[in-house]
Image (cartoon, rainbow, N blue to C red; front, side, top):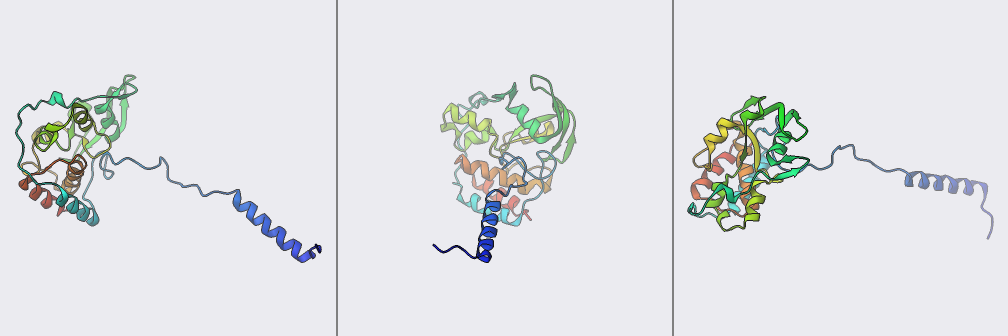
Length: 232
């Protein structure tokens, strides 16, 4: 083999240095915390939110159209005790504690995870609260409403999962007044007083019903479509 000329040797050395330098580097994402679970609204203060996007309206409408329309089932045999909650979530916290921590700001808790202070925004009625005792944890699709639309046929384990679901947009820290005004009603008979939240509310309701394969009544579907129409 003939020896390389000085010019060629220099070029090859430079090329090798470039390759080695590139191999030793990596592109690190600047995003902190990784992907977030979609367990609740990600806009606004705490668990609050505003109106969704136009694309969200279209996807929400498509998901709504995919739901099965049926008459509401009877309440025969229903009991909240059949939806075990709030279950332990580790470190002394139960599901309620986790939601209060997630949806609040500057939340303080005791050693056994009892929430003692913080600030929360109740998206249903657009109220700011600082007393954890002034908050309820609302099930987006109420337990009784789920029972009437399919959960009566579930196992106890499935109902427990539904009642403590921190992954879907099912659990929200809201004011006592708004939660108790809602009760077990669906959107055909109760909507959040804050119209700015209607889009997010309807999207969340449809997401939960779709995931758990729960039915909707025709009146419920019409009300949800009206709410989704407010998405901007």
